[in-house]
Image (cartoon, rainbow, N blue to C red; front, side):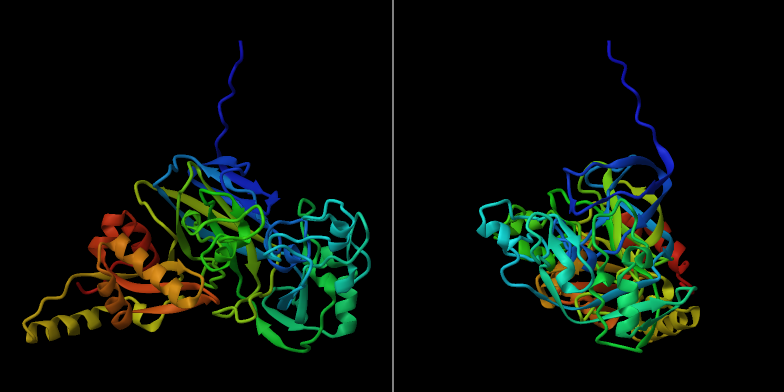
Amino acid sequence: MTTLTPEIMSSHLVVDRYTDIVGPSNEMLGPVANGGTIEFITVPGCWGAMITPSLRSGHEVSLPVRIQGAKIGDAVALHVEKIEQLSAATSSGTSAAWDGRYISDPFVAGICPTCRDAGRHFLYPDTYLDGIGERAVRCKTCHSEVIPFHMVEGYTMAFDDQRSIGVTVTKDRANEIARDGKRWMGIHEHAHQHPVVALAKADLVGTMTRCRLSAGNLGSIPSIDMPSSHNCGDFGSFLIGAEHEFALTEEQLEQRTDVHMDIDSVREGSILIVPSKVDGAGIYAGDVHAMIGDGELAVHSTDVAARVVIRVEVIKGLKLDGPILLPPAEDLPFLLRPFTADEVNTAKTLAEQNYTMLEGPVLPMQILGSGAFINAAADNAVHRAAQLLDMSVDEVRNRGTISGALEIGRLPGFVQLNLMTPKAKIEKLGILHLVEGQYGQPAGW
């Protein structure tokens, strides 16, 4: 007779194992109790994976975690309690794909052309570093150069001990950092990626910037397997009709959960509400940036290792297509700042003078959207908001224009649709306690 051991549920789980593909085939850790915390020890997201062709994604992210009680059709609120940077240096820059070293998509399907020509296995080649620089990434089988990306103009950045300021360094210093890259970047022993500082890039020297940590990947797994970097509408569009094994149709791409956001407000103090598209939700994290400007013009920013602590809260019956973000109040655009009692009193008087009644208390929220390009991302966010809030598309557009804002999270196609939303509609979604907890109760109503 076989005795079944009940699944042990945790109130706190530390995650230090990683994957490149996210979806139903993932091993899920946990479960973590509703109200419990997850501590992700993340590794750098983008460039390290991009120069490691055995990884089938432009990101290396944590294994997902099952949340107790989260079922398909529910949502999970992720309270970001802590993001702590572990890297002392990093490197990044603009990129160009290296022709002949990939199939369809250099983020996903790197190859060794020498092994292909010799009739050997050539897809996702295992590699090693032979010295520093772009020529250092070599195929373990034939020792050819196989890096699928060229860093067109790049930099190496060092950070102060408090991780508050970054400065781009000289070539000599970049070379020194490159020779001990894993230590400088704090890459966990379970990670697979090469340290991007091994490229020793120093085209931009002496530039200073402020640090403000944010998680480029945070959320739930999709209901279909896909490369983690492509769990979004813009990079995900590269999968449509691709020639590699992760090719999707347009309909299949709708199963994404838009975890790859690169929004700088997904930071300490924010609340991210994400869909549960598989039982257990499968919460994962990665791609933390030391800083990232709106739009991420270079396509890549300063990837760092980090400790990310979130508290999870299951929202039963809230069926979402993509995430809702409640950023820290100081991150809200001007028109989204909660009204003061004086402003509400002025509006009430003005309404009465014009034979009108105010619609009632309103509070800010952000509906996130993605698409192959910015206009498509905006349309995606507008349609998500219309469906979620039971409004017409035109009403959403009007509200977003006069009492909201559309912010660019990332080019080519990720946006934040800011809406000042009637309290009654937020309450109907079951998240009023989250919104009021973040921004306070509406004043003066």
